[in-house]
Length: 352
Image 1 (cartoon, rainbow, N blue to C red):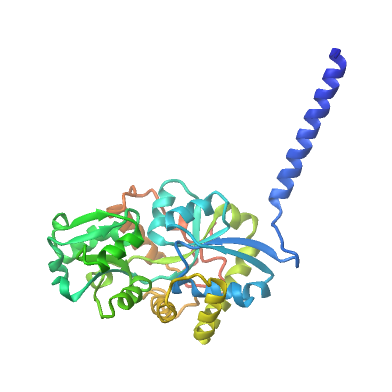
Image 2 (image 1 turned 90 degrees about the vertical axis):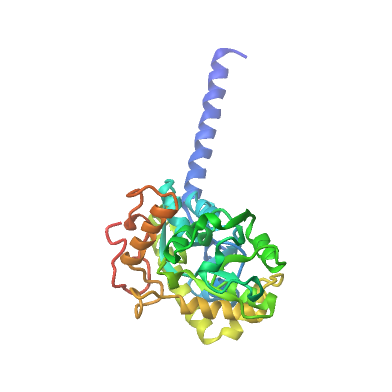
C-alpha cells in the first residue's frame, strides 16, 4: 500500500474513533430512562434489606417512585464504606449509608454528601444475654466479642469504654464479618456483641426468644449520627432536579409506610421474596428507626433535616476515635439539606 492511501485510511480511522468517543461522551451525560420515559436512578443500601430501609423497598414495589417519574433500581450493599465508593465513582447514583463511614470516606477524598438523614439519633449499642453475667458496662471487662473492622459500633467502642470508665484493653476481640459476629454470639462463643438498636436488637430478641441486655452508647453520652441518603457531588451538580424528585418521593414513601406499615411489609416481601428477615422483626426495625429519626437538634423539623451541631459532634468523634485527621473534613463537605422538599432550620449546603 502506498503512503497516500495509508494516510487516508489512518485519517478515516481516527475520525471514526473520535466520532465514537464523542458519541459515548454524549450518551454518558444523558440520564437513562425506562420504556415509559421515567428517569433511571441506581440506588444501593448499606447491607441487606432490613426494616431500616422499608420505605425504599416498599416505595419501589408500590410505585411511589414511579409517580415521581423515577425508575428506581434498588440493590443491596455489602457495607457502608463500599456503597460510598460506588456512589462516589458513579457506579451507583444514590446510597443509604452510616454517617461515620461517610466521614472516614470524605477524609480519604471521596466526594459524597448526605442529603437526608433517615436514622439520625445514635443507634449504636452493645448486646448481652442474661447468662453471660453482663448487666452493666463494667461487666464487659475481661469478656469477649466478635469484631467487624469498619463497623460503626466497633469503631467508636473506645469512646464508649472511656465514657463508661472501663478498660478497653481488657476486652478480647475476634475479627469476623457481621453475620459471623451474630452467629458466634448466639452460639455462646462470645460474651457480648455490637449492633444497632433499629436492626440488630429485634433480630437478637427473636433468635434468643428473650429480652437481651441492651447498652446503648447514647446512655454514656456518645451521640453520633446514624444513617441517611447520600449522593456524589457530580450527580448533585448534573442532576439536581432528579435528587429533589427522589427525596420528595422518599418523603412520601416514609409517610405512607408510617400510615400503612402492614401493607409496607407485604410490599417488602413482594419485592424481596428471598429475604430472611422475620415479618415481625421487619416492622419492629422500622418502628425503632422512626423513633431515632430525629435528634434534639432536629426534633419538630421536616423529615430528613440535619443539623450542623450533630454533624460537628460526629466528625469530632471520628477525629478522636476513627482515624480521621483533625480539620480534614468540614460539615459543609458532607452534609446538604438543600435538596429536601421542605426547608430546614440549618441551611447546610446553601453555599455549595
